[in-house]
Image 1 (cartoon, rainbow, N blue to C red):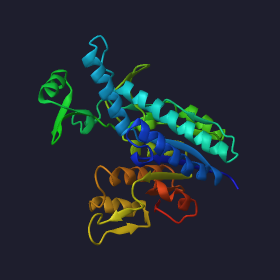
Image 2: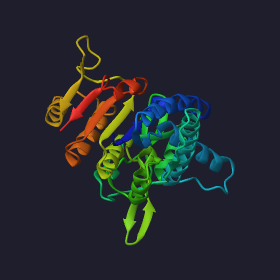
Image 3: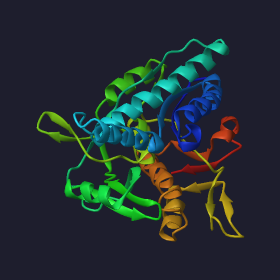
Image 4: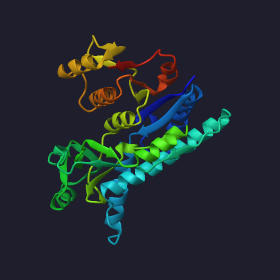
Length: 310
């Protein structure tokens, strides 16, 4: 039986939000991923980085406040740091789990850049909150630098753009490792956003939504399946109400109709369904699954999650 090529997108539940919590979380996540490898899936893994990139951004900003000679790290550098740090924990834990099961298979993390359009509308109306809560004085300093700030109940936070991904710069390397039946961790946190300026790639002050890049990655790899592992077992109709109903299966046209009805939360389920649609429109014979990390073994048997097909 030929291997199934799958892109697996890991959410916050799979990673935790602090260094210690992440290490504990990825050990559990590694077991679920190893189950897929044992079931003859060829995996390319991508992951979120919200808490991680915020922690790094805050740490680098505070370092500059204490030691003025240290320059604050731009968002593209914080994204790169988070890719390396999260990828390291995943590949280390997964490699260890595979060896425990007698499976010798390379697991690699690729530092991945993703091009974005400098004229993407999100640059004009940034909405993605990152970093620490600030005082009014600190917020004014950020505004004077030309950065965007939003006021929340706990204080002020910097907000950045979340542009749509265009191209995955290292896609050839990802494909080469995937075709060699290696486990690949790529496009972490949505990838490092870069803008093409002639032959130069310049880091952008932005973040890319990890669900969006998961759909793009699965499409580029022509994956058989896109698995989006999140905190809920299904996508739901009328979510949060007394008559919420799990969606066991839906087509792309049904998904688009539910989107028009406003069935999916703008910041949680909607990006996942949109990623599935993008993937399936590029790979019509593929299958997208949205479910929780804890149901991964049931996904193997086709007994869990919302299954989306063309």
